[in-house]
Image (tube, one colour):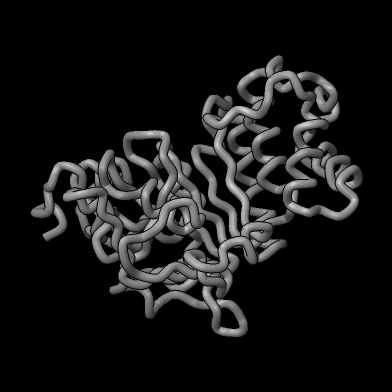
Length: 282
């Protein structure tokens, strides 16, 4: 189902290779939660200061399991900082962050094995083969029967022809598929994806998007997607959160944002928000 109440969580990054997302308080009441009422990700009053600079300014959002929602924002919007706090890598100045009901500030190690992150911009050790790299990450995540899990991923993601090739000798497209395999090694309930189809030809990119959709639906995972590809965001995401200067600027389904701003596509909406052209929405 598509719509504001069942949004898939994606992040659309307008200018850098960071990964981040946020969901506005004004839309939180529309979002369905997991069956026991616990959101996959929940943030309340999140603030992060770097000296006199406020990078994130009071974000509140709740993200359901089995969802994908997008965050759009340019450089300095607070996207990467927000994701860092959700992952437990950055300590908030104030506020709360919970993933799968777990306090990420105090007990993140209880839930990290149920999350994963993928980016083609983060290289794996070049000298290790694809199989060796996946084994290392499988062991780090505590995956049972790592060899069987790697075999399943190799078949599912078409890695067999280069599974024993050094990772440093892969093409861009092959590296992207391996990065996705790494992100799926522990069958995560929360996935954070940064440009998952970067450097891919249209056919392979479409294949990756379809795989992500199938995984989300089968696993009931919450997917956080950062992308410069606005067409990708429109396809994968029911919800887009517009972030500017650490605050929520707007929050709606892609089609609703396009209608609200009187534009023909999401890229034009992004430019309106990034350049302060609020009159387009009014």
